Length: 304
Image (cartoon, rainbow, N blue to C red; front, side, top):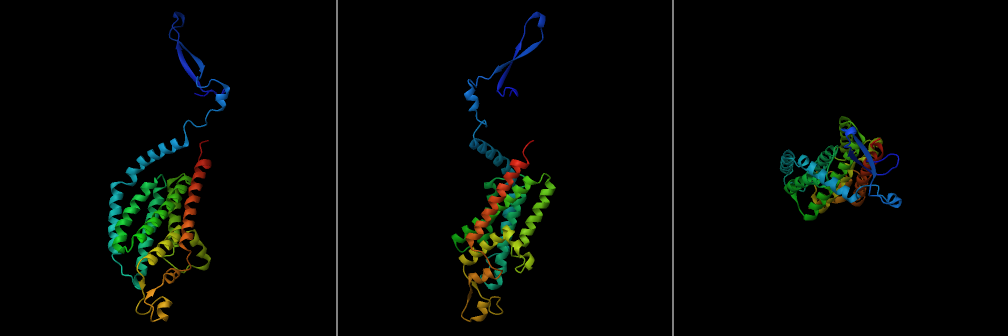
């Protein structure tokens, strides 16, 4: 107990009186805590009862235990395993031909946006990083080899950017969950943002109106999708030109060209940034939304 006047930690002991005239009554005596033997020790008293590391460790363990049964439930496992097999079957062993470029992009866009949405809406309450990474990893291990895995480097690079985009989406979800007191409002805001970032991601349309083109740079899907294309088309076997009516000028102008260059495939949907720039922007998304979520909890949601 804290004495509001003296600002001292105090111990109260109950002393029962045994006088016949005062039978049944009790009195309270206040004793200054023996923890402080001098005025100097009072000044040096720590603000918190334990260290930041201890608080972080205990809260992380508690949150991990609480979230594990919810996020890695049997239903989520069945959903992930089933979805991985279905996607692997749909995109099974796609040939590396010009006519199949849209199909290959479809797998990359679907896997990116699905796990972004899964992580974003799951983070409206609370999440743990290892748990967030588990299900996308299982999905990738199942579906990508079924589509056609040509090198370990490509496999792990795509996996890394899939996890990065998932963690970025989690950061957005944490910020929205902290900023919105009402769950329905949080779901509405998250749905509006996630659907918008999907529309401007670069898969559904490659020719946006001029007055809307700037919005694609606020889409986290855009940067992850571009990176995954550069890794897949640059690290795997080259894409063969169509025998007739090719969409790529390099295939139409030269009879000796058999495969489509990587820059032609990427720039066919507009000018793209290099991998390092897209990655840096994704990391900025992650850091900014994490700090914004912390700022809301620290200053706007603090107890009054």
